[in-house]
Amino acid sequence: AAPIVRFSNVIQALRARLFRLGSLKPQIPWSQEAVSQAGVMFYSADNNPDLWRRLISLKDLVFVVPCLENDEIAYIREHPHLKKFVKVEDDGSTSIPVLSASRAKGLEFNRVVVLGFGEDCPLPLEDILAADADEALRENTVENNLGLQYFLNRLYVAVTRAKQQLLVIDSIKGNERFWTRFHEPFAAMGLATMRGARDVWEPMLGRMDEALPLDVLPARADDEAVVRHSA
Image 1 (cartoon, rainbow, N blue to C red):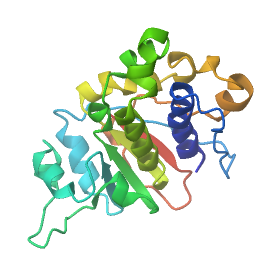
Image 2 (image 1 turned 180 degrees about the vertical axis):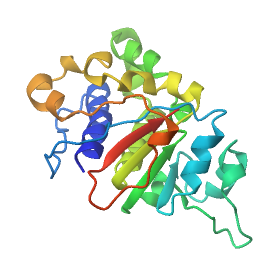
Image 3 (image 1 turned 30 degrees about the horizontal axis):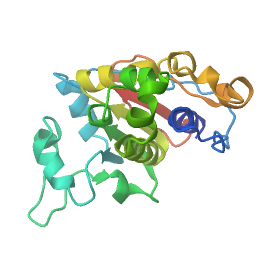
Image 4 (image 1 turned 90 degrees about the vertical axis):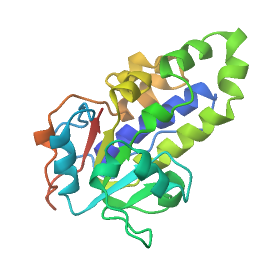
């Protein structure tokens, strides 16, 4: 769906800028129809029980989390909200699917929550972008930072699992660490410096807007897919 594709293009553009991947190009949405709902929602997931009650009431929800494959149960038990709302059975099954990005790779779901990736970023995005602009810092902090490469690769996998609706949920700390520049990504991430930025990338990028827990509504089959963000 167009909003999800455009949002995932922001991750690709960031990868292209940071790692000088000139061959990367934005994905073009199959559907070019206008979207009637906001492209991305922003919440505070901290101290927001109404949001979590709404989420667990959705029958088609899948969480993608930033843990290693096979560490999903440990992640649930340590997460301040998942451990309250997701039941883990004795056989390891869960009341709501919770998958690592590695486990989710190659799969698609109608509605996906990308949870906690902002806190998992190796460095604050502000510091990453500053180091990228400083030749003395760039090589060690950005170019050869395998942890950062791995993080952005997993994040891209996570945000591209959704077919109809994508919600990105993070803590206040995670939002400040990573997501704040996704409201106006082209300007805030300095993407204009990339080759073909204005003609190739800018028209294909999504963004993040504010919304309320009431906006988390069951998706109808005839609705355009939407991307949502919560923090």
